[in-house]
Image 1 (cartoon, helix red, strand yellow):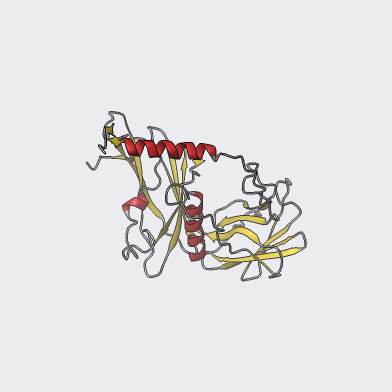
Image 2 (cartoon, rainbow, N blue to C red; image 1 turned 90 degrees about the vertical axis):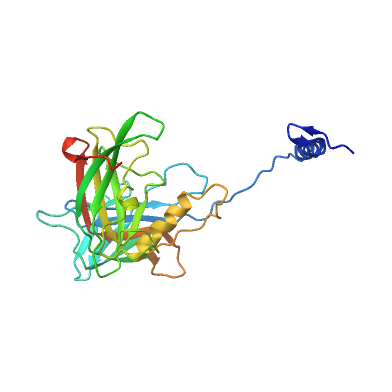
Length: 306
């Protein structure tokens, strides 16, 4: 039989596709799936730094996977953070919104590099705890801008930002980079930037070297900065478990497309003293923080490297 072609497809292929479409249409049936919601869990967002001013630990309760509402605040908890010298900091939810705040007295500051800190939470008859250590962090040497085209086919230009910092030599170091554009934190799903020794995990040995360019450029926005924009970069020290927490968190929130993997729980360092009691989610960490701010103005603009 002659295999007639139509728009590059044989008539046999077109007939088979038509039969398949009819079969799929005849199989359409609405199916109601009853997705039961499991028990809620305590969620901890506790990142404390050595910077002056109040420190906050946010407590909420988890909600169902398809619940788009804001998680409810976990109220009525007792929250303390103690260092290894038994100095206790009490965090109080003054506004009744789940934000438990420690306010320093005059001249007081939280956190010392090298010390370990214990978080303790008593909530609904359960006692939770976590431990973190404040690691060292290098200074950020400079923050500069270079004018570039928005894309190779455009005459419109903007400015790409680049910061410079050098990894601390002699030991593994883990960092979290946060960026603020005109005072607003870049908090999109792809704005979690962490680094191992100023590079990527598992890359070449970069101990003690200048942060690699992809990390230095990670502070940019998609459409580039404009003149008079302000940019603030924060470099925070984190522990190895915090580093891997962020990596897995980023994997889950960016999980999609053809090669998506099944959703999985992100590990936590929050433990219940009762191993048979309800679990908690989230993370507690303490960080040394160094920052730099700059505006896109002539004093901070460098010649293009092209």
